Image: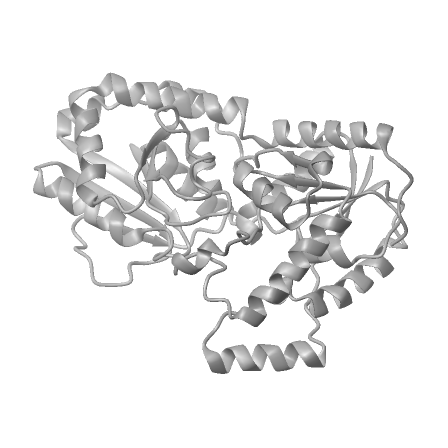
Length: 391
């Protein structure tokens, strides 16, 4: 197919959107589709949006530009002008504003993990990426989400909870699909996972934990540090390797290693990140809220078991007792440490999770599978589609 792939950010930049746009579009091309990239797209703020933005800055409330319907209308018109010069069969976008406000007669597919729960449960999760919205900002965001779901011909989401919430905005189950995202990495192959064991860790009574996340608070960085400290209290020489954000408060540098943000678009930094995935023993991400946590999928590709909370957006990315272990939201550091210490006493349990993590990646959360499934759904819809409604 000829695909117009519309993204706000540059889909050739591996460092944007955790690499999702890059790996998604590259896999489309690898599978034989011609991809016309539309983006990056700068936001244009109409007078109303500028006023709303200033008001929220004064209030200390969150204003979300890409979910502002006034901004989205302008963006949609610009996208339509660009599409007029592209010989495309289908439009695929990850942006609900583009989906909702781009006038077009061509089939349009929305593939995103962006969602606000219908009862706005995020208000109880201060670290959620769409928390702290004012009533006005929440109303604007919901207008855009509702319009995007209504206007798209297919609405594809990576996790069931997002699909369930989408149906509350617009009950059109016949066009909603769930297709997990893939891991945003170059496949390391099965050998790393196959050779993973705790023999050296048991011999040296030490464990290496990997934490990857840009948002220290929301990703649970302080919990990860507390887990490492608890392991030391138990006599286990643990080291926490932190990639992305840095601790929000002073930590014991004897057991915390900081690497800063490692850019996947930089070959040397990407190699350093992949080496950490290979060499560490477990991935820890006590996140309180996610859309669909991609880094856990990357860990799974390396056969690296994950330790995480049973939280929104995490339970589909980490399969409990298969690719890792999930604990009740808010469980203390001792709970994580107890599980890790148990691996040192029962390494077979760890090996089973390492094998399960790689199997989960190979069978469910890789871009080859995601894109082939996506286009199978598109072709099925095209074969049975009704007459396209006017934009």
